[in-house]
Length: 332
Image 1 (cartoon, rainbow, N blue to C red):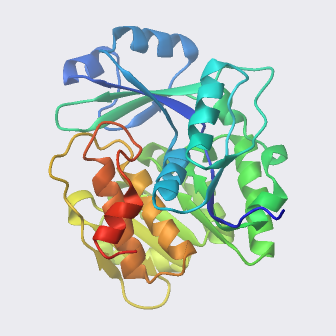
Image 2 (cartoon, rainbow, N blue to C red; image 1 turned 60 degrees about the vertical axis):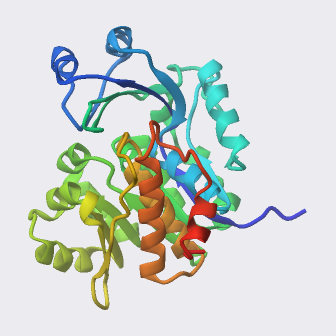
């Protein structure tokens, strides 16, 4: 029996999210940058976790969250990521497969434990993340399944993982497979710190391999050296065939290499609970729409809808069917 085609396959960090409410004093006491993401070692992960408020543990990771949203939209997704051969790894694998996502990457047998992200959410719904990558950073070219990549309309890479040299090799390998079969490659920049540390190599990678670039306004400003949207648009067109820039409550911009910039309105939830995963949801809706051949306005609107659902509750994965919401809004 032939395996079904995939809308999107994500390549990213396999992380278990640990979410708790916190105040600015807690962030300061643990030297956690507000609203950002830092990488920490296992000892510091234990120290921060010990001081956190009562937490919710949810299988996460940026690209994996996007693939979970694609499944909620009624799409078919796959995921390539590394977990350890441990209890958290098994929980992560079970959670993703239970959504109907293909996740066949072999676990890491000898090495660190499954990764986790300690997410402290302040009263304004801003999330500050401290990440112990653990096994997640060990994605390698050996984990790239050529047949699986061939079946996906879009292969989607997570910027957080770009900083791991062996994972970067996996990105390049997967891109070559996708391009050889006429498929598309997408990259989310993930974090300003990633852009600042990797600007030169990121630019080279995007120019040589990426068809769809996703960034928030701060990440775009860091990559293109300006917060002027006209300059960002001009430079984005030179770098990539399509760039999406999210702007929180101001919506988003879709910048094609040819043609006008498309402005997408934000969809405000009834209550803003937690911004964790907003960009992951937007990426999912946009990429799902593009994989299905939708217009830029329609794909972008589905992205806004998915982001709005995600920020309306605690956690980075949908609490209700995105497909049902999209159908109710006449987007599907």
